[in-house]
Image 1 (cartoon, rainbow, N blue to C red):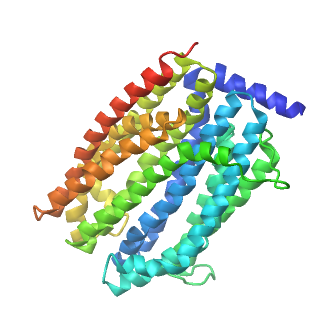
Image 2 (image 1 turned 180 degrees about the vertical axis):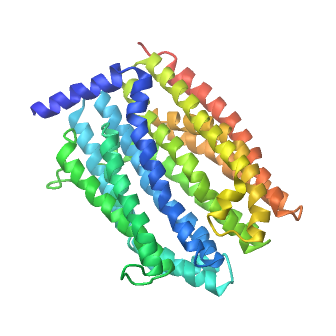
Image 3 (image 1 turned 90 degrees about the horizontal axis):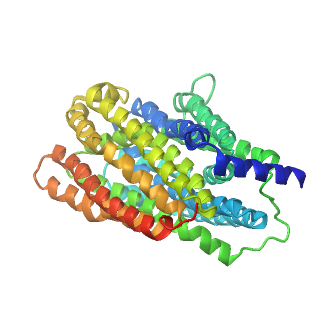
Length: 458
């Protein structure tokens, strides 16, 4: 009991009184590093898979929407749990903290079971809907079936890492994520190419290396929660799901899940558009996603860090700290994205070379990377504001902003530009869509400020 009280006071001092610049670094930096390393999962997979063949790389690219959907359901639920749990911490409601965590565990278990069942039945149907190339289909079915059927590690790792993050233990979360990612990086070449006495599994080896890394992260984060996360009482005996808690989690979480799911649907449809030109264009789009994740993931880590800060200080009615945190986060995100923009503009050929690019891939990929990257700094501000909406319980608003960008603007623009007959014109759709997203985000922020922040008592 004494430990809980001490931790509660420490948490209050950290979220409510620590200088915001230091606080943002303290919470976000470990998350930024861990998410950057997390991005290496698919990035490294793709580099090694590209050494098999371009068709293998295309198969992994086509698998991305389903993998992203799985991650989106896990991360979106985690956003809801984080926001609710952090708000209960700010309100000093210890029972509410534990209820948030246990109902979050229940939701993760149910979602995991759903994707295991889907993994048995849908991979072949999914790939046949996108290509008629038998080699790509077989590669894809091998890879995606393993990732889906053995997804318990993914859901367990994200769940318990999020619980560590929600109570401010981001360094511990980083340790578990680093462990999982490093495991994946080590076993990728061993299992793909059969090195050091391991079986040569080809593209299936990339999938097994990924799930092995996820289970390592799961095991470490689970152990760290039991040992270090004293604010949360994990008690399965007598547990019953609470609809009111689940509703509060999904109030923020469902829009976040839908936001990520929209991205999966968008990527699937963009792949169909690109496929009308050449499968190489699909491979380029997949490579772009892997490379840009190394830029976007640190920004997502930064913005995941601001969620508990804003949620806590909203619960504590600290207006000035909320606004300063938002401004600091936006500036930092823009700086990161500007670095990414410069890398994409100056070194596109070097980036593509890592994936054994053919002449055709260079011809499509160089203008693709340079054109799409122009939207990075604008995206930084939009991502920051979406995180603020989520922290304040306005998940629906974040979903609306995302829909404006991806459904109402990006997809129609990509389709219309494809009618020009030049695949390289499609990439301009990203800049058009981000401009619309910026306008929607600004309008949403003004509404949220006037309704939720402006009249808070300091």
